[in-house]
Length: 232
Image (tube, rainbow, N blue to C red; front, side, top):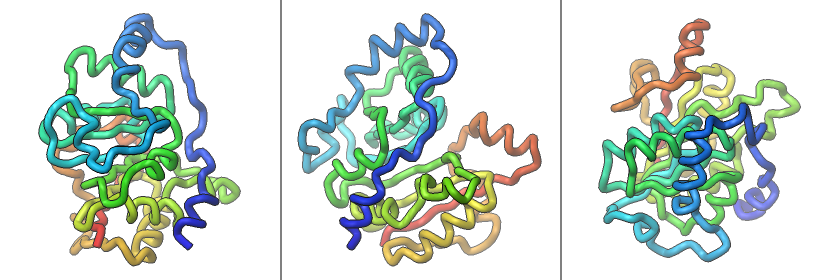
């Protein structure tokens, strides 16, 4: 049943691919750095993902939709012995990441620029220590809810690729999407929300740098939520 759900839910969960024209320095950094960092899903995934990286690592985490790359770049620097895979279909986001890497390289980082569901289906079972999904598009109109990344099929995907004890983290300033995610995770037998008080979800994650989206939300009076679910 889980496999059938995954096959049905492969529609792209992102919107536009490109924004403003890239600045020359961004375009140059992207052309020079990104080809060597991109994952090739045309070949089978290795059984041990730690071999994908240019430095020794003892675990692998995934961030889906990393935006401008601020958090992913920082986390890769804070955790040099962990490998990170970042997914971002938006060309401008990838270019911003390239600019960050041009200034501060990260040997423990690989990237993918297409639909995250394809990457999730490529990964081996129980291969990830953590998955981060921060400020995803909330698709607020009911007719677009099927495009929200948190859904039954993708929770099945997360459950398959996360190790037991692995963590799924979700942050958003949209109350309805926070509630949606809580319901989806509490409904799924593989995940447990261990929040003991409101402070557990109001407090940003350790080392959290904030994002442009978050700053805008706070200015507009929306309170972010930081959810953490454990893979049982």
